[in-house]
Length: 161
Image (tube, rainbow, N blue to C red):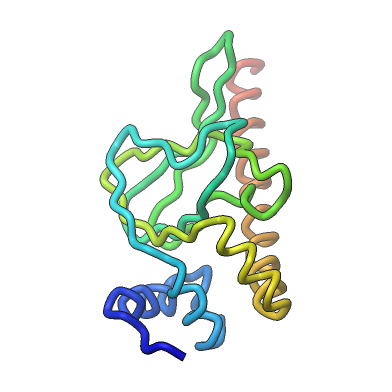
């Protein structure tokens, strides 16, 4: 097996500390580090656009991003703000691999970027890794659904006192 590059070693350490991946065994972290990169994102950049293909999974290291939905008669509706330690984008895991929300960068943000097709291939090749990632992903999705539900209830109650 090839020796990890300096970038892979740095990404391995970042993965080891990130809440989404910190419980994974070393061999899984090494596999993830081999496909990952660190990306710098600027305010106004979009990580995901509703309905468009999802080509990466992001683990936030710093900064903030907003989960938004567009409604023609209301414009952009903010649903949630995500920051350091959060994971962004679950649609890469389920066909047709299209975003269900817009994710917009709110302030300079650094993230570990995992290419979706390569991540799916790693999971296909290693069912134990797949189960670990999917369990974390399901927990994340459930949490986000609950947060969105509360946000929508709050919006409804403000409009219909």
